Figure: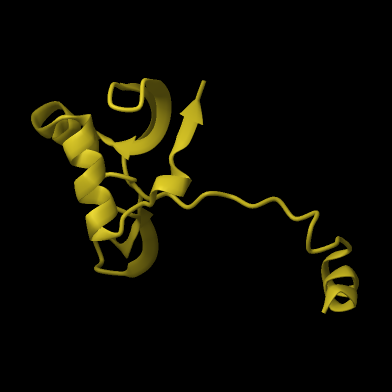
Length: 105
């Protein structure tokens, strides 16, 4: 398998850069695919991306800073419910797990 990767792409499997997908860790929102519709009703495929950004929060229960990739709607959920309740809901719904949350110091 590794020889096939080297032959096709010229790199090892371990050397490939792993990119994070554009998914909100609180609400589970992700990019959707739709159509651009012109005046003549011609349709071409396009992506509807999520308003996603990276934000640091102080997690009082664990006494540490964490970094989350959240959407604007996820930020509103955190402001409404609180960080701990929003994280517990996200883990219960399967949008993120405790290992995927980055702890900063």
